Length: 273
Image 1: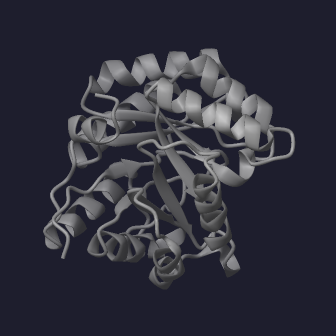
Image 2: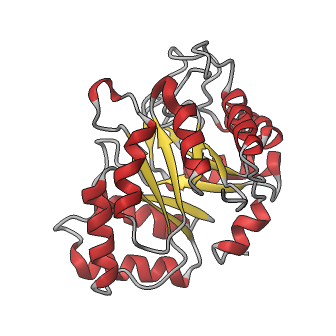
């Protein structure tokens, strides 16, 4: 069984949920900062950050990101890695997503491969963007929704379109399953197909999130939990806040002998320290 430090990330809000879905859903810089501090105390060393516009809608506004990052950073210091999303969420196109990342130059970013692997970008555009990410030492997590995405990522790496770098990948379990409910067995095809050297994480939908976390941690992977994908505790009860989901995952890691990675260890691993 792996004793590799486990990177525990919290995704506290996502692009779609609203406070009507859960009163503890954070969407303002102040509530994101308070949530980040609670989740840091519970064991998370990375925050996956979405921001909203004044109407509560998904946003990739650079100024909005800078404001939110400053407030969150003041709350957690250097003890959390702050990863911004570049998610399209049906609103943004690939050129705008890439332009946001370049303008913001965040500490860390998540990039959905299928969202930016578009004709408008092409292989040359992908090569240029990923080379820039390496030069700027932006910790980059590539989001893969299925094995086809993973195979495309591997193809791009083999062809040299994606340069060598300290990449990580996120396997999204159950995104296209009935009812968008994940199953730990959803991880198996990814693991069979994953022949690269990238560290991998999982996220999962619904009340089975915790079972998927346990499976990933047992197999040597890393995990992302939070209200973006799930509002329920492992016993089926409604989670009071994001920190409760983080605490569950931390307890699972402890049961499996996986120490929790610190932000400093994450930065050292991915070359941003």
